Length: 192
Image 1 (cartoon, helix red, strand yellow):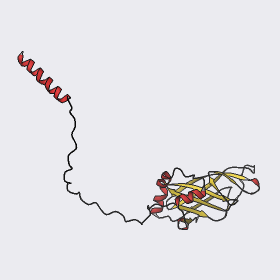
Image 2: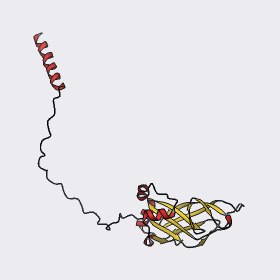
Image 3: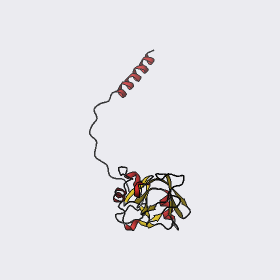
């Protein structure tokens, strides 16, 4: 019985000593640094001041609609271009009455006439298309009226830049160009 009592007392003493937590002391001095790891492969040097992914503008001059809409695009894209396009956001603007109108949306033309447009994009092989389609119009009739666009600009924005600029009004052409720092070097003339 004395043995059993001693085992119980011993276990109680262990539990009590583990349950007590005294005051912690100060952290000791830092030891010497260990050996350095292996050097990794050299990265791409890139271009000073550039993040390597810039936005572009696909543009037209003055064009007339066909069946109320318009298709623009670019041929003979490089593999880098197609990779960029496949992970980008496209916003489209139509210039009419010397104002930039965001699409999808309503575009006002002369004499109080307007057309609401939508658009789709298609990347096929080395070709990129933007098909601007009329949705509704003020002229009446079953067929969309033909319109003259002073210019069309499709801003192609790498998705990372789009996410990092959530506060931008993407329906305001001037704000988009300013935010993305677009210049003449970023303009690509549509050839389709």
